[in-house]
Length: 512
Image 1 (spheres, rainbow, N blue to C red):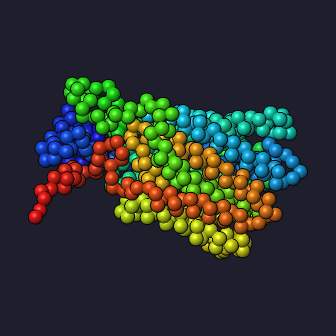
Image 2: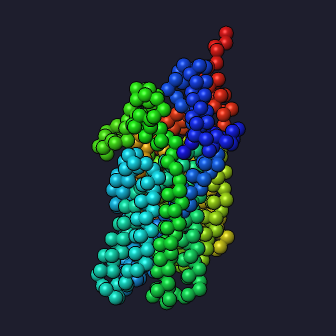
Image 3: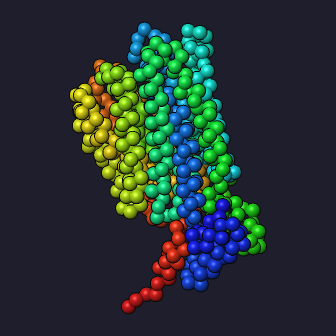
C-alpha cells in the first residue's frame, strides 16, 4: 500500500518508481532541513485509500457486533428456550450468565489474536476473527431447544458463545489499531469515530431485526422458531465482511515494521536497520509475559478506562431493553424501539465528536463523558422510572449524550497508549481483560443486585456512577495524544504541504 499522497501527482498511484522517488524526496528534505528527523520517514496518506480502509474496517466491525448484539436483544426469549424454569428471574439470570460466559474467554482471545496480529499483520487476523464470529453465531441458530435435547441444548449454547467470545477478543483491538495506523495524526479522532459508528450500526441492525420479528410473527412463533432467524443471517453477513477485509492492504505502520525485519530491498541491510531502528527495537514477536512486564502501567490505565466505558456502554446498549421490559414492564417492542431511536441519534452526532476531540483533545471529551454519567445517572433513571414515553426518551437522551462523548473518542485514544510494535497485542489484552471483568458482566451484575435489593430500580444508576468515578480518575492520569504521532511510528500527515510545514516548523531558527 503506498504511503505517499497522490493528490498532486495522480500518475504516481500506478507508478511504484514515482512513489519511491516521492518518498525519497521528502526524506531528503527532512534530513537537509532538520538533521534530527534523519530517522523519520513522514507518512503522507492518500485520503481515498484511508477512507476505503476505514469504511471496510467499520463495516466489518458492524457485522461482528450485529452477531454479538443479537443475543442481548433476545435474552428473555433465549432464557425461555434454553433455560426453562418456573421462575422468570432465574431464567433471565441463566440467560445473562451465558451472555457473560462469552466475556470470560475474551482475554484469551485477545492474548492469542493480539500478539498474532503484531506478528503476521492486522488484516489476516481481522479476517480470521470475522470467520469465527459468523460461524459461532450461525451455529447458535441451529441448536435444538431444551425441550428437544435437554441438557445438551444449553451446553451447545455455551460452547458457541465461547467461540463468539474468543473471536471478539481480537476484534476491537485489531479494528481500532487498523484505523489508527491508517489515519493522519490530525484526523485520527474523526476517522476513529467511524469504528464506533460501525458498532452502533451492528447493534441497530440486531435490534431492528428483533423488533421486526417481535411485531410481525407473534410471541409464540418467536419462542418456537423465529428467534433463530437473526442468528442464521450471520452466515451470509460474515461472508460479506470477510470479502471486505480481504480486499484491504496492510497498514503503513505495520508495513514499515515488516520492512525493518526483512531488510527492505530499498538499500542495504545496515541502512534499513538504521532507518527503522525506532520501529524495530521492540519487535512484534514479544511474549505475553514481556508485554505485561514492559507495558503494565499503561495496561492498568487502559483497563480502568475501558472498564468504566464498557459498564456505561453495556448498561445502555445491552441491558436497557431488558430493564424496560422486565423491570418497568414495557412491551418488548417498545423498549427496542426506544433503544433504536437512541442509537440512531448517537450515529448522527458521533463523527462530530470525533472532529471535536481532534480539535480540543481526547481528554476533554472523555472527561465530559465520564462526568456526564456520574452527574446525570440518577436524574436519567428517575426520568426513565416515570414510565411515560417523553420521560423515558429524556432519560435515554441524557445517558446517550454522555456515552457518545466516550464512543467518539475511545477508538482514537486507546491505540495511542501503546507503541506500534506491541499495539495490537497490548490493546487486545488490556481491552478484553476490562470488558471480561466489567463490561460483559454488567447485565448479570445489575440483575443480581436488583434482585438482592428487592427490585430497587435505581441500582443501574448507582452502578454506573461508581464506574464513572473510576473513569474520571483514569482520564485525569492519561496523557493527551491528539494531533500527535502514534508511539513508535513516524508522523502521518494528509498532504505534502503539511509535511513541509512540519519539517520547517521543527527547524525554526531561534529569535532574540
